[in-house]
Length: 444
Ligand SMILES: NC(=O)c1ccc[n+]([C@@H]2O[C@H](COP(=O)([O-])OP(=O)(O)OC[C@H]3O[C@@H](n4cnc5c(N)ncnc54)[C@H](O)[C@@H]3O)[C@@H](O)[C@H]2O)c1
Image 1: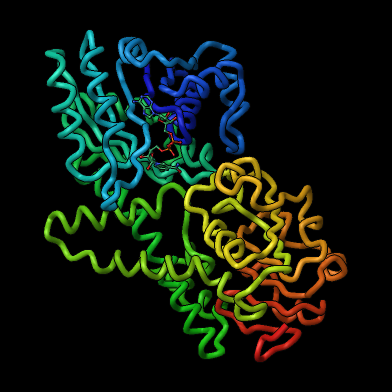
Image 2 (image 1 turned 120 degrees about the vertical axis):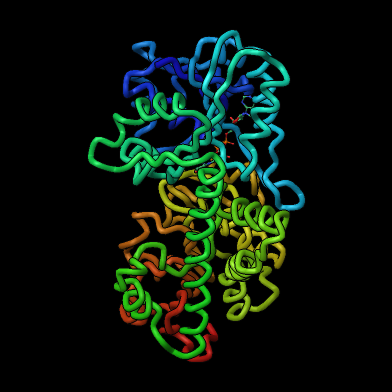
């Protein structure tokens, strides 16, 4: 099939590479000239495990091409995906300017019947606006569908190649048939292609992300109760998650959700609900809990080391909002680091892949360490933000020796508290008892 993908970010690149891998001719278009030049030179602008060889292979055989010429990509394709960004607008709604600009370009460029699919996360009703924008420019027939993307950054290739399900909202039998054919190679193990009406598909994406964000905020609230009562959150998590009606995933407490999707999607869904006169207080609570949870590590540093952190060095392990990505959008680490810098601390950070990306946000206001152990030199505290694999079994005696003060604030519950006192640390984690030096009052 001839496929055009407009927008070559995380979603467009992954979709383009995977659809090319299954034998389609795919042209990925983007208005970012620098990005397209790098892609044509075989350089991948994002860190995503497995993406590079897929792009290299399909570029080499000519099944995948990159261009800045959006109109020619539209003309060369029968199926056109819109995969541009939908950032939060000032009022929390999804900013549709890029989606609608692409729709207009599609309409202006069309020279035959097309199937146009919004893969960007867009509020219910957007497909109708996309259709209007296209039909204002052309008389050629167009089918407008919604095919929300559920990939997880860090596992995006696997998620696309072996999706839990494919959700497709269609406006015609013909579009349903074509999209089924396109996705059939990805669901051979029995996963389903769910064909539904366009509005249901648009709502499904937001509902799924909002549900996951709700689980996170809910467990972070339960973790606060555990801290207040001395209960162990891990036991509660296991007890709750073993209920088959609930399931065990997305029940880990932490430093709050971040990334390019959950924060903006929770806000946008709440805005849509309010616009339709539906009570959105549940989502407001999810967001409020998350905002407060993002401050938890900073508060705990201040409780122990005081509000004036001048002369203090704080090590940070993990900058990305989650492991296996260099994405820093809405990363909770930024909240902690900005708070530390405001209070005069010297911050030395390490992340296995996100340090280049972090420089766009933090510049040289912090120091970037070559290794996670280098970051600890003379540190008065270590703050852990991202559960990268190499941080899980570190050399504790080496850490203890490097640090000026043996204080670890672990936002990801990586270590067993009962071991940490033995290693000579004061160890503060989420929803679990504080152990080690200075407990119970926590004075380091
Ligand atoms: N990143 C994720 O994990 C993820 C997962 C599921 C869904 N989504 C959704 O997919 C959409 C895209 O997200 P992303 O993370 O890939 O965004 P991104 O910011 O990484 O990429 C968007 C790309 O679109 C390009 N673009 C903008 N306007 C354009 C135009 N008029 N013509 C051509 N290209 C244009 C930009 O230059 C950029 O390269 C969003 O709606 C997002 O919510 C993202």
